[in-house]
Image (cartoon, rainbow, N blue to C red; front, side, top):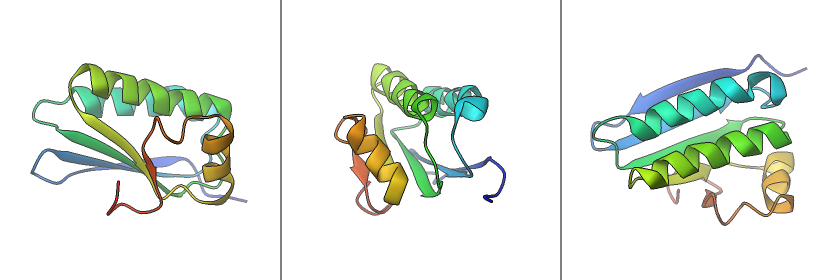
Length: 112
């Protein structure tokens, strides 16, 4: 069993926002995640948003859609958007959906 869905947002003070997600990202939580990502992308002074999936064991289609929505809003506002620490099933899901390149998926937060 995995832990509950949780999100922690960290502003680095230099235009970067890191959204650390834990728990499964499925239909039940995808709307909440979308709203968090949209809020981060629209935040004044933000230049880039990184979504850290290191502690996400499962990513469903609705979760992929949430990430794409966050990216779309970020791009619309001239911000960079990347996904970091996508491993195992989560990484495979992003690749199978054909969005790993679109979401700038990195295996760590340094390259994201």
